[in-house]
Length: 100
Image 1 (cartoon, one colour):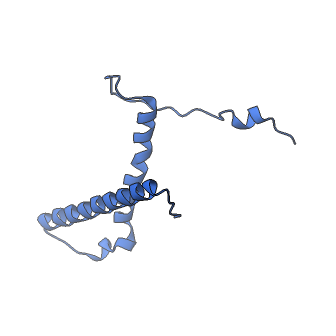
Image 2: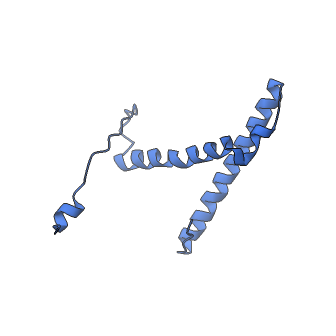
């Protein structure tokens, strides 16, 4: 079976994004970039919910303690994301790659 180059590079489908931002300052590329960046945030919260993080082994009764633990976990996630961003920026400036 032979394929023409035009058939290979031609888009195979559509991806629709909608927004309520009517300011005209949000470009299509920026909107797509923001949408894709949600994936890393979701990955972080998925890790916090996973059994690997051992939160299921903690038994907290007081709402204040549950809120405090949630705050600590969220702060940890923010620090992790900031460090990951910093490392990626450094790798980009040094033109290095890190395989995951």
